[in-house]
Length: 508
Image (cartoon, rainbow, N blue to C red; front, top):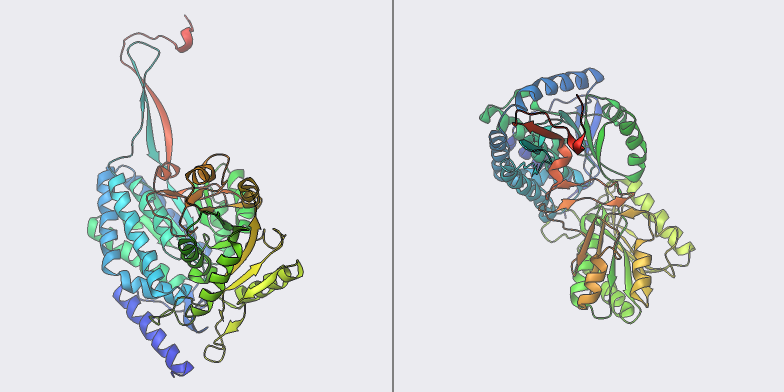
């Protein structure tokens, strides 16, 4: 068995190799420690950006914007195309960094990088499809239409659990829309951010785009707060907790800025009597334990019909102990670590609270591998049967805890499903077409994402991503989410030689 020192050396070597491959030369300093949840070790000590750095970044981004907005959109798409090619070339390198900093197993880390590649492909096509409408005018000899224009410098704030994909969702689309970028990544995932930014810098250089088009700000909350309050950012796109959203949303609104907020989720699946229970078992297990329950789309609540609940819980309780827990760099691992000690303590407190509210611990919840990884926090995913949807169940705990409740009538299940403050992702497992249609109708799930016969996680970039209620209401990625990165202008062109007024108004 490897010693702790050997594991740490191997991890550091993998990180160094990935950084070098992506063209990153790390300038070490004081302020931010790049820590790995795999071992608990500090990988690098990085120099923290200053307020003067932020001022410089904004100034350069503003200057680059004045050139970029006048660049034809298909030419802007060429930059994103090249970036996507470089991401493809360095997919495994970036995956190593995502694993090292966020604790994701290799397939999930590579899958996150694939999301970046996918959104680049979508954005390249979008660069030729920034459509506006032409509407019939009520005045003869007039054309009425709408046009879309870039906003300016877009501020992007991302979280540790998806350190690179949401950045790409925003950046690829914002770039083809004609904007420039300043990115504040999580303090816990700075190395993957530097590598991602380095590949974009290479694409900028190779395509002749303005050099000041993008920046990465290695900063704490205080400097991130200055971004939020700065009117030079017409749009702030932020991923994080609902608590963070409550803080920043009023400040952005106060200065009449725009925001795209992707905040907390408390995602549930309803399992109906007609459900394919084998399919439900697999869908629930992945959604509940993937990324150690640290996805915004992780399944946290299971609402099962009373006729199938016992069978389903029994199957889950048998499946959970077979899930390999350990270093995400090991090929057989399915469940990696929690991000830090605070996440572990929050999980333990949530379990304690749930049991005090009448819950029954079915399995899991304990820390494991503490001897091998004394400074890391690996846990057994937990299942807790609850008598009702208590206060603890209605809160989001970023850990692999699945609360199980039962129902007798679909109306009651939907009501229970919607009776939480969050509204990100949802699912129903059923073979009944009527139940499926009901769930995705306006009388069904109140979430931004509503799935049938798949779990709550694993969204594709072709659809807009985001939620309702305390999840924030913003949308990123595909569909028409591009409109959030542009401003709309309504134009009237008079080619009649006359000057008729609208609504039949006469003047002079």
